Length: 243
Length: 243
DNA sequence: GGCTCAAACTTGGTAAAACAACCTGTCGGC
DNA sequence: GCCGACAGGTTGTTTTACCAAGTTTGAGCC
Image 1 (cartoon, rainbow over the protein chains, first blue to last red):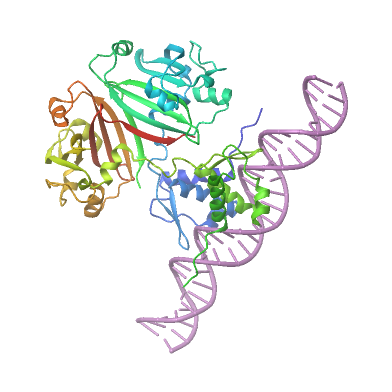
Image 2: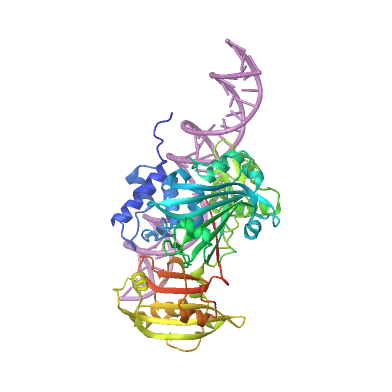
């Protein structure tokens, strides 16, 4: 085993400076201590100080001006809020982290829309794993994973139990694929009678229908995640900076 | 005067390597030459090589693995594409760029949801500008801008004609506010009879209801944009990288 | 007083060196 | 054959050193 790995010095410096900015020790608009002052105070070399300040600049905490110094901007508004995109969580969270029930797990003909997202010919077969997620004792959403048959071989995706690791880790470990980005489509529709029954929702309220195609760096799709959310109980929220 | 300032060496290296990756000299999935090889080939020092490779890694061109090397990923698909996010386009595009008709423009009591997004007390009044956008001769979507009364003074937002500049430029020029980020909420519902009529859509198909709160760097909201999109004619699409 | 200019600060970039951590082979011994 | 030790490769981190370029300041001259 390993002893608690200590973070590198420059990362510690980043943390320290972030805390001081948040605490108001370095108010926004003011000048940060110069490189030499930081070298003195923390007893590290200049490259270490510069590395820390570079990280802070790239994250938007400070801005620098040659010849003058580095100005405090404050905590970057979205640095942390920037995460929970709709389709993303279902890929990275293990199924066992949420209650639920596996509805289907096996190969069958893909809907046209999924075929297009997976770059498969229409009417071809693919593997489907569909799960009803339960939150607070109530049915909450239906999550479906579609993947090409060759990708599903050798995985535990046919299991009727919740998977202990995330779909992403599962595929990455067993098939060696590398996820790169997600293309997400959001639409709304009236649920089918079956969907409404499973979700325990009135038939005349719409569902949000989210398709997330997971692709590698070259744009080749691996998996399509579909999430069905009753619109009376769920919203999608997202935040992003604008230039 | 100065001669054309030459870019720093590490930046030149970044460019060279990017071009080689794009040209296929370093195909995705393969190993990049090691630091020592690059030092040899380009006749620069190790910190210079490392600085260039750090930039490439942060931009998503390569990924590195201690003890093994650096793997080529390819051009980062989304780094520059930075899609038009749903609420964003309506802020930056001038109204005159799309056909349409101003439905309302004036002060009135805000709905609870908008009040919350604008940090206003419930039942207070705010300025509303609502417009029906027409595409290809068909009514397409309803766009509403809500803003606090003090922000609407001195603007042309009461005009019944399409504004020649974007809402963003308009407010930035006249009120000196600086937009920083957007918090977006997406939901779906059945349209009201009036909405369905204006949008020329069947009453039993849902609409996507997008709320985008535009805020400054400190999180204070300026404007709320609401877009109503018939779900049978519109989808929201978005792409983002995953770590 | 007002101007010029040099000195002293600031950040930006490059070079050379060393050690640590990690991976992958090869070469033993078993 | 199997397994461990080891050597040699890789990237990660830190240090020392020097030069370049932009900004501010103040001393000194007119």
